[in-house]
Length: 292
Ligand code: ASP
Image (tube, rainbow, N blue to C red):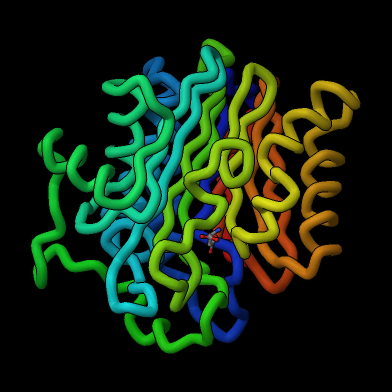
């Protein structure tokens, strides 16, 4: 098969359960990979593709992120997102952002329009409003579709709807982006791995990573950065590094998965437990979209 000079992976969250039919999500993810492939073929940059793909996942309402977000224990929607550009190490993030349809777009603005990496809570909301980002217009553009009927989980259980994307573009640059409403019934103010650079999201010149799972465990092993550092300093392959980090998460009692890409366009998308919604475009131009 023809080698493509680009590749990507996206996920719609770990914790997929076997008795559920994810046909809609699988088809949706495949469509997004096709759109991303076409954009990359025209020279789109890794960061733009990663952010646009995550924004489309947020906007669909099919995942527990963006418009499909689930509420915290106080009934409020606190959303987290982050992104990182491998070529120059720039990053942006928001945590516990309330009321906005696309946290990843706000995270990008934090990176591009402030001297900071992360804004949280009220400060993030004030910033997003001042930047004119779309607010959730209830009940039409509502938080929740994906989450409906899935919200009555015990506290801390995986939302299985975090979304993320990692991309290698035609120039060999890498980027990662991740967005979530966090775990079900989280305490107000709880922040997981998703908006933390080095935990849920990381990209440098060699590797880009987006994680999904019980964020507390991914934070404790510095999951995304650890993968990059294993590749850089231990000379491990992407497969070896991602598996080692998931093993470490599992050893602590955690659960989840991740997607990762390296500068050669090699992909890894491993997960613990039953499944993870994911879609890949390989360097061979092959598209794979599944949940288990
Ligand atoms: N990692 C996310 C968090 O802990 C949840 C998930 O991926 O399902 O907030």
